[in-house]
Length: 148
Image (cartoon, rainbow, N blue to C red):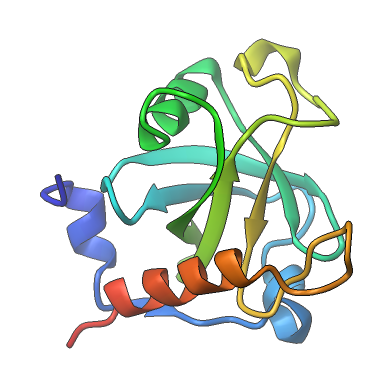
């Protein structure tokens, strides 16, 4: 499924960005960006509204939510997924889960809560530590986005 034009345009431009050394500033609160799922090639738009250890985010529209759900195989899941986040001309290797939880900033997007996006070296709120599964997906996304 990687024939997606967005996927092909991004390949070769993906960088690894440390969350605590510029990542959080780059993907600032309020940022609207594109998420590309590395395994499916599907893309949707999202918005960061919070988070200090990683980006608490939500799909922007109900259509974006439907695409996100397709990335997850048609059902919400805590499974981590390698993604590329494209914002302000830069594409960064990242990881997300597809489970709506807790805070729900926008009721009209059909996503009852928010999801989390992790960059290199980001942490989880519960333990203040890195999540090995998120970090493995960040590295998978980085490898998949390299030109070689």
